Image (cartoon, rainbow, N blue to C red; front, top):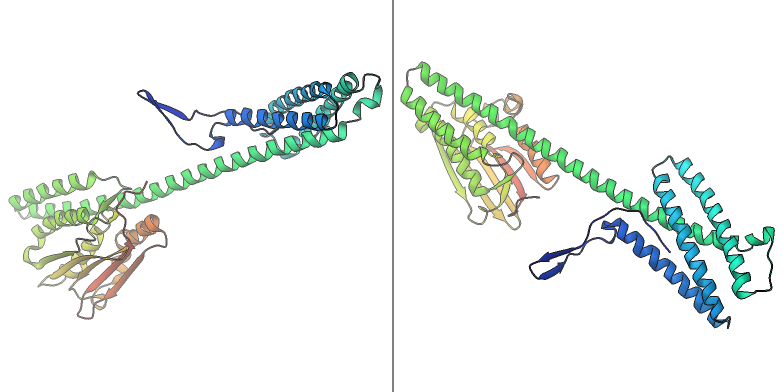
Length: 377
């Protein structure tokens, strides 16, 4: 004696000659769930009323009476469900006012039929008239109010679940859009710097070096554009991307740029947002290699500690005392702020991002993220 609205899908799938039943939420097919609950509820009502009559020695005629009441209740609640399905979308004052009126009307009709049925099957000598047909209205009103309350409770629960799912989808889409925007900041920024270097080589008539840099730039872009802007790559793939980038920069700085990679094999398969480390290496080149005549070392390290991956990008430049950290963070609109935002979008509070001046000189950035081996869905 319960109800919910309509709509839905099936739960079976045929593969060849075998049928594999897939589990799905009970309310996934709302139309099916309505008929199951409606039929089961009123079947239970019929059984209980029949057993009550038989226990009180009212005979077979009481079963006919119970069957008529069951059919009446079943039919009235179907009509109520059709009306409630439209009322649930109205303003609350309209929904509740009209619903109460409908329950009162249905209760009066139910009581009249129950009184007539009792006089026909149980007490043939009775002749109810006028107000006597409302003799059972209190019990019937209670029954239909319970049915209506259950109907609305289930439907509001379903609406709440649908809204929660929709909100989750919107939040996921917004997060993906934010990640894509942050990632798309990198390519134009990097391209501007690289093309500026190529332009300088062309002006200096170093065409062979310019062509070599263009070829390396093409390889780098092909490699990076394969990945989705919101996707992740393994530490090993990110390192390969950095090596392609550094091949381009080596054309500019030659022996002044001395990269070094120390990647723990246990951390190599951990995943991180694509192109996360490239801005850090670019900053190290700009603020450690460029201003020093002897250049600088740039070390990229990755280690796995338990279920965490610790990544460090360090240089042997002048460190915080010798460079304008404000310029590092805001001069181009990317760099460190971009890394912080992308880490926050990807991991929430489950990450650590630190900068520090090394005791032996130079500047380091430390990233601590969870060790994950599967692409987030």
